[in-house]
Amino acid sequence: MSGDNRFPEELLLNEPDRGRRLIREFYQDYADITKTPNYYTKIFPEHETTKTAFYRRSLERNGHNQRSLGLDVGCRGGVLAGMVGLICWIGVDIDDAALEVARGSGVACAEMDFTSAINFQDASFDVVMMTEVLEHLPYPVITVREVHRILKKKRGSAYVGSVPLDYHLHRRWKVMRGKRLSGEQLHVHHFSFKELDQLLRFYFDNVEYLPLSGTAKRHPRWRLPYNLFVRDIAWAAASPKAEPSRWNVREKF
Image 1 (cartoon, rainbow, N blue to C red):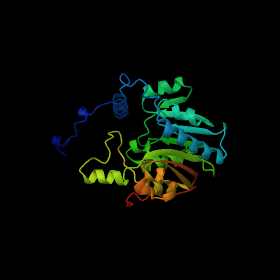
Image 2: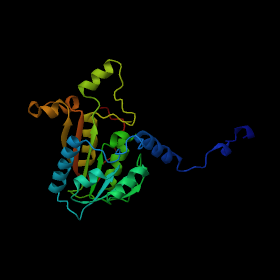
Image 3: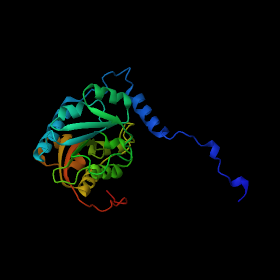
Image 4: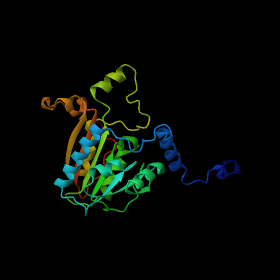
């Protein structure tokens, strides 16, 4: 092989954590704490109060208490962990400014880039919480598989969280008018209810939902399909399957 085919190794960056640093800087720039000083502690009372009560009921029903260990993935300022309470929570986030706020509120936490892998040992936790996080991650199938891996394989082990749904009728009409599906630049995955449901039921035996907004939330007696009439949804999945097979990445939704 001639010298002309040599790969120019000297041009490569020697910065192993550069990707994590860029992601962290992106989130911090988006937060712009100088303009929104309460960014890491701000909550939307209606949604947060509703879904944390939903999480608590599910955890209580599955026998969890202060002896249970929970992981809040994307914990931000630790607000939700404090609201849910009930068990012993720790948190991880990629944003060190958020972690400083969380530690100030009494949450034991650490910096972690969980955009793909979640770096904990197998069967480490009784509960994993991921509220308004999954839509920010590029490969939800990998993430949920990682959640399943780090949960203890017991009947009561639980995965709770929430996401916006982007394929309800309002958003579909928006796209037909030439608009973007979602104007939120931090959202890199757009869920339909069918996709979310298939993914959770692939790894868990028991899954229940709580619509947070949309026509199906306002009119529960109409029994409208979640795929078309829910904008935001919370879930509580329990009883991780002992040995699920590989997810079919070519699955059509």
